[in-house]
Image 1 (tube, one colour):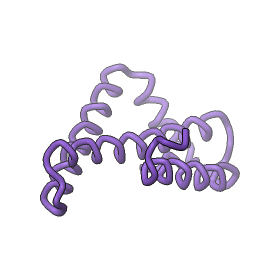
Image 2 (image 1 turned 60 degrees about the vertical axis):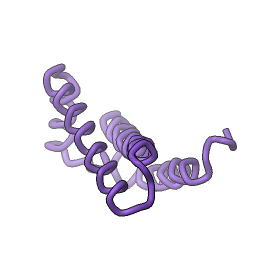
Image 3 (image 1 turned 180 degrees about the vertical axis):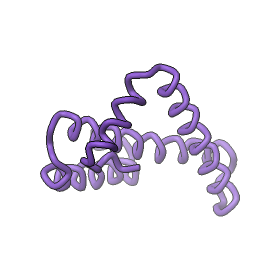
Image 4 (image 1 turned 135 degrees about the horizontal axis):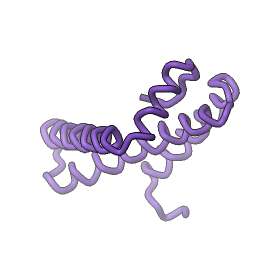
Amino acid sequence: MTGLCDDRRVLGLYRLINDNPVLVNGLLALRGRDTALLADALRNTTDAGALHSRLAAAQLAATQHLLADDNANHLGQGRSADQHHPNAVADAEAAFTLLRNGLRKL
């Protein structure tokens, strides 16, 4: 999910999820499972140990989720996907550059 869909039905679903604590908890659980699966995949396909795989998966997943949430919030405030797309791309490039290069540039 990129959060960059301005179809009114998708925006309505996003609002429904975020306005319902039970659905928010379900989304958080799903994100946790996704992160665990990514950690397993990293551990099984790289030389990284369990801790490093979990750390990398957590960072990658959190970045993707934050970017998607930010995109959806912008669209929820009335911007179209076309209007926000250049900013979304720039934000994603900056976020993943920060991950790639570490936090030393903050």
